Image (tube, rainbow, N blue to C red; front, top):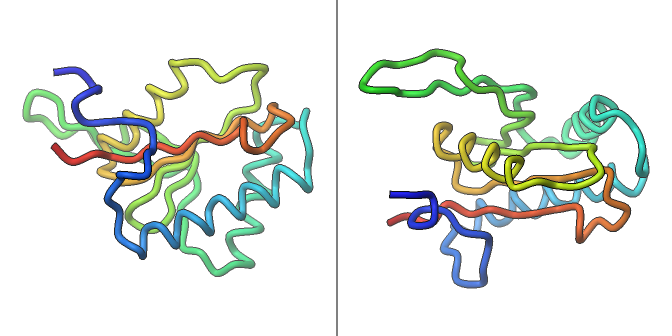
Length: 143
C-alpha cells in the first residue's frame, strides 16, 4: 500500500490534539521569524542556527539533526535517517534552501515522519520569498 492511504497534506479535517496544534503553531511562528529576519539566499546551515536560537528563546523542546531508526524486515537499523529537527515527540521539521521544493523533498519528510512516528511535519524552503509558499504542513492520518 502506498503513502496515499496513510499520509495527506494538511486539511481542516486533520485530527490532532490541541497540544500538538499549539506546539505546531509555535514551530510555524519560529520559522516565520527566521524567514523574515534572515531572508532568502543563505545557506541552509544559517537557517538551522537561527531556528535553534529562536526555539531556545521560546523555551520549545527540540533536537537538532535527530537520528531516526528504521525497522527493515524485522531488523532494527540504528541511526538510519537524520531529520533536521524534531520538536517534542510529535513534530518533524525539514529545511531546504533550494530554488524549488521537489516531490522528493516531500517524500523525505514523510519518511522521517513515518519511521520517527511523528504526527506533524513541516517542510520549509527558505529560498522561497513568500513564507506561505515556503511552508508545507503534513499530518499523519491514522488508518
